[in-house]
Structures are given as C-alpha cells and as structure tokens.
Image 1 (cartoon, rainbow, N blue to C red):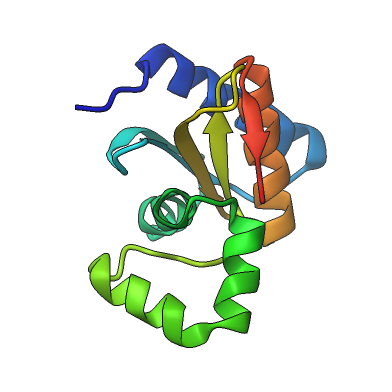
Image 2: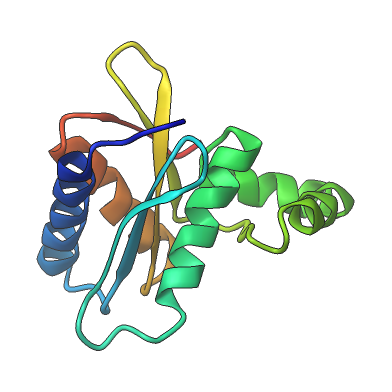
Length: 143
C-alpha cells in the first residue's frame, strides 16, 4: 500500500494556490496523487470549471504512469502518439499527456507522488505545481 501524508498534500495545494494568486492565474484545480496513482487530496478554486478534478488528476497520473514530468510526457506524446494511445488505453483513459503534471521527489530523489494542475495555460499550471511542491519542502520534477 502506498501513502502520501495528507498534511503534505494540503501544503502543496496551499503553495500552488499562493503562486496562482501571485501570478493572477485563472481558477485552478489541484490534485495530489500517491505513487500508486491514488488521489490523496484535491481542491478546486471558486470559479474553476467542473472538469478540473479529472484534468488535474489525469496530468498527475500521466507523470506517474510514465515516470517523468508532464513536459516530457507531452513531448513523448507528440513523438510517439501510438505509444501514448496504448498507454491511455491501458490506463482506462486516465492519462492526460500535457504539461501541468509534476512528479514529487523526496530529498533522496525517490518519487513519492505527483501533482497535477489544470485551469490556466499548461505552463502556468506547471509553475503553480512546482511552487506548491517546493513550498512543502519537496523536490519538483517537471521533466
């Protein structure tokens, strides 16, 4: 059984929302998953669209499933669409291969989860995810 502390997940979300406020981003949805791809925490800011839970978790799930941050996942999807389609099928369509999914690493470099954010541009989503992870004292790997 994998686990990710809820208090750390909430610190990541708080840090991501703080970055979003500082940058004036559109309303975000933030999902934090453990290494098994299970949802630990999700929050959606007021005004965020109804698909933010699925989109943000799909970005985080893609990073975990492929073992690389969303920036690299998106590049692979463009380079090898047949592979991405296959992985998406195997995952039951849970993969969203775009920027905004960021692996969470501990101080020793071990992947301990992933964050996915959706709501603004993919680059801004990623910036908020990185800020949230760093605010929790962890290491962000956007790929």
